[in-house]
Length: 452
Image (cartoon, rainbow, N blue to C red):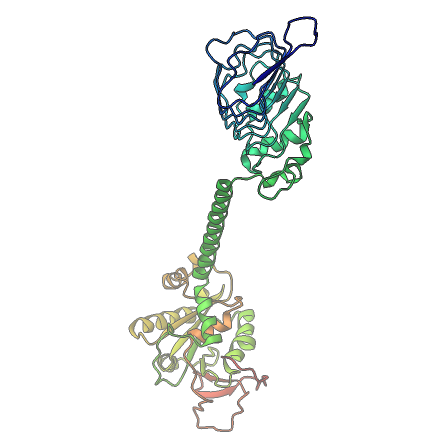
């Protein structure tokens, strides 16, 4: 049912048409001269003009709100090119034809609030010079950069309403968040535009939080990959360091934890633990041997039985004794310093120990490097052992652990070659091959210290 009104009762012109109670269809007749048409409050799910309608309405205001509209024909507004106000609010519109408003060049006020619109197409507003655009209360979750650019270019716009939509505060709305803060001055109640997930105002959410789940998963994946790479690098570094220092680590494990499954298997039925060879002409090296090495080896509760040779006391017939003492030892300690190659006796005894170790698998040649050595100055056999890492550095922090690991286990208590039983446990005892007697080296009294 429609009613018609005029501003001037003296004329027959129709200025207003008010239709309500319509179900499923448009009125059969609408005056093309009506300035304002009210079609609100109806039930018209499909908005379509009858074929006989005039294509050139003079209407400036058209109200179709609250009419349960779900679909609008794409040419419905083609005859309303004089429209300045169009109200389609409070319907069930999910989307609109692409060019539905393109001929409405005089349109100033467009109300699309409280519908089911999910995506806003910038093509809807091409060529328009709107003053008011109301998109409040829809199901819009993202806004495109193209639409934002279009709004920036619409200089006539004074009022844009976007609140009460399920806005997603994710990566797709990052530009919207930036735009809303810097350029969205035309947006009314912009601080009432909330994130759907937690109802926080969109402008109060930090820009860094505008990420997508895909981005988060990628970020997590990148984080995991980075962590794995770092862990692998650390593992490689640790393994490289462990391989490089493997002999030190193995020695420490043996001394501290008793793990010695890789230790050398020695001949147990020999009276001496080690035969010591060094150049006595080097005062610095000799001082380290006498005041550090020998004292360390024999300060233990079960001290090592070390054989040394004093060349100044050795007679010309003592070479056989010397060779015998080497063969009666479980191992040989050979000290390499800067002067050792100029000592023919040391070189001769090295070769003797080297050859004996090759023929006797249970005998071991242990090299201690005292100084910085030029490899090309050494004997070939010495260079081979050093190149294989088969040496101990005197300045190393693990020198004593390495020695304990490399040397055979000393038997319980001192063994007196002369049958003497009155030797103190803390006396340093050295066997001299030149005199075939036991000498006391300074009777150095050492504090009790337990080594594992």
